[in-house]
Image 1 (cartoon, rainbow, N blue to C red):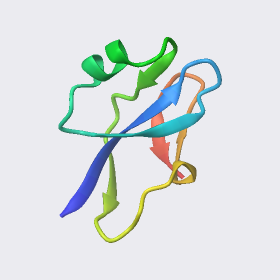
Image 2 (image 1 turned 60 degrees about the vertical axis):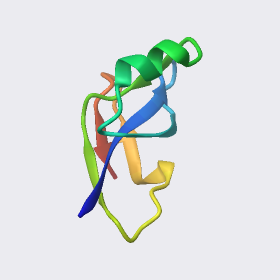
Image 3 (image 1 turned 90 degrees about the vertical axis):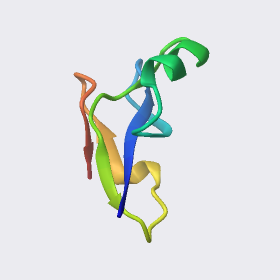
Image 4 (image 1 turned 45 degrees about the vertical axis):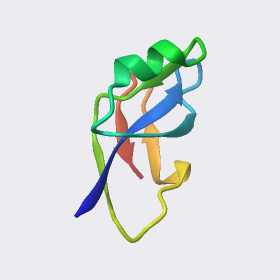
Amino acid sequence: MAQELKVVYKDSDKSIIGFLGADLDAEDHEAISAEGVKVSSEILSFDDNIIVMPDMAQVSAEGVASKT
């Protein structure tokens, strides 16, 4: 198994503020979050045995998330 996550980030500077399980609704999360918080559409996969930290991903100027 693997952890499948979407990146939660600030739209203003594309800084990562957390992760959201791929099975959760990104639109619902954005609706209840502070203004300017976005969720990537890309799903990133990480091994189950690691703790995923913000420096393990990045968000491009276009809002595309990827692993670092």
